[in-house]
Amino acid sequence: MTYFVWAGFFAIYIALLALDLGILHRESRVLSVKQAIGWTVVWIIVALSFSLLVYGLYEHQWLGWATAADAPGGRDAVIQFVTGYLLEWTLSVDNIFVIAVIFAYMKVPVAYQYRVLFWGIVGAIALRGAMIAVGAALISAFDWTFYLFGAILLVSAAKLLRPEEEYDPAKSLLVRIARRIYPVTDELDGDRFFTRVNGARAATPLFVTLLFVDFADVVFAVDSIPAIFAVTQDPFLVFTSNAFAILGLRSLYFAVAGLMAMFRYIKVSLVFILGFVGIKMMLHHHFQIPNLLSLLVIVSFLGIGILASVWVSRGGHASSKNMLEGEGPGEGL
Image (tube, rainbow, N blue to C red; front, side, top):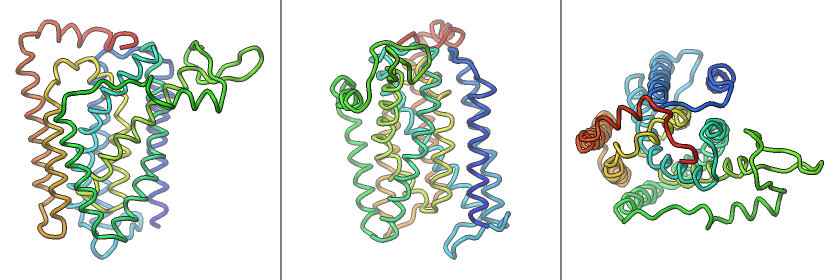
């Protein structure tokens, strides 16, 4: 029955994606920051609601869910899921700034960015699934993988302390490779990924943008995947927490991109969160930090970063109110 639960999860997840794009946002449109924040809250509630199913699966073996001898109980499974979800959700904020630069470089109108992010999520789920499978196999086979993943997180935290380097998509080989493999047009054709030029099929710059977004997610997954393994090594909890964090990425993007000036200290919070999780992973074989404590630490660092950002930005209260009621990120960001 384990396969039935996995199949049920994918059915629910695909239904949520279909609901989001096919019904709620069938037409490409610009989300105001206020609307984006509202949808971000909705997806957070959806993820937390899923944790109730997690409790039933691990505490009462609902749907015939079979757990290993060392599997967590219902309460611990919920804590691990919520901690993993919050951790991945927090780390995705840094990814958002890179995506904003990609949209600006590719000159993608705001109305089409929503569709790119939707299909970017689909690609990210597939790519992260593969990376999670590899990471789980390494941890199962080699104990020293915990030290390796912990070191990756500490190095990532140290990199965030360096002066910020502007991401330049023009330096990437992705565009040139894409042009060699498949014809690419110089102009957009609405929200189409592919079009026809002189009767021949060709990719539009929107498709190249999609490749950039998925590539950026893979790069950031190098940090986030080891981080989630510091919280739990249960494949179902690892994958589902990642999946729900990515599900709300689109709304979170429009919310954060419109309020970038207000969240200037989020990156400082990420430094402490990555450092803490990296240390926790390296201590895995010597000292177990309770997952509830980890959740409290992550929430605390994130809260401090948000409060500090809002406090410093309190002088721009009027402009922040205008952004909330306006059209969100400017065209091309």
